[in-house]
Structures are given as structure tokens and as C-alpha cells.
Length: 110
Image 1 (cartoon, rainbow, N blue to C red):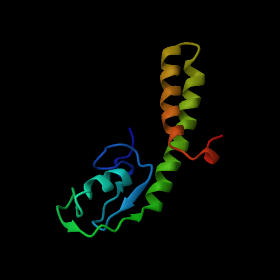
Image 2: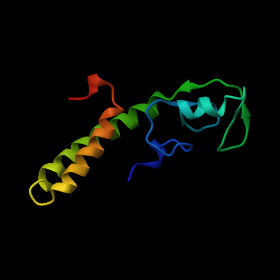
Image 3: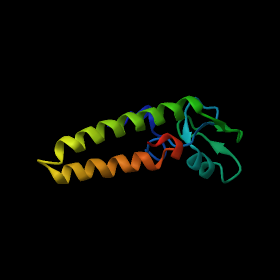
Image 4: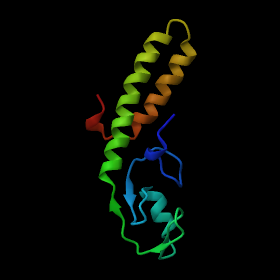
């Protein structure tokens, strides 16, 4: 249920440290680094070879952080409601929330 615009097209996971390599797409930095390990960056989306110049995608990063924070709040509310009738589902919701929280800087986790 994660917005695909907030997920790396290579790793398919929610962004933590997205970068723009100049092809109009954002990639997780670790994926972009791996794609450029040979000394050039060939866009997996456009197949165009680009210079290795990654710019931080601050806008995408902020959107992914906001999504995580909103989703954690929703998961916590669900876990509180489900705990009495479906404890296993409540635990699953808490585990998912902990995955989102782990990707946030400590100062953003309350």
C-alpha cells in the first residue's frame, strides 16, 4: 500500500536516502551507488548513460518521512483497537510500525 512514487524503482522499498542522478527519476542512494560501481551510471529507467553526479532528493525524502510518520500513527491506532480482539494482528501492526520507525532519524521518533 506504499505509494510507488515514494519507492525506489530498483529496490522497490520506501526511500530512506533518495538521490536524483539526472534522468528524471529518484533512486535509493545505495542502489545508485551499486549501479555506478563500474564507473558509469546507466539509468535503469531510460537506459541512458549519465555522469555520476547524484543530487540529494530532499523533496522525495521529506515525502517518504511524512508517509512513515503518518503510517506509524495509523498503525498504532489500529493496534490499540485490534489488541483486544485480534492480538496477532495488533502485533503485526506494531512490527510494521517498527520498520518505519527504524528508518527515521531518532529526533523524529517520539
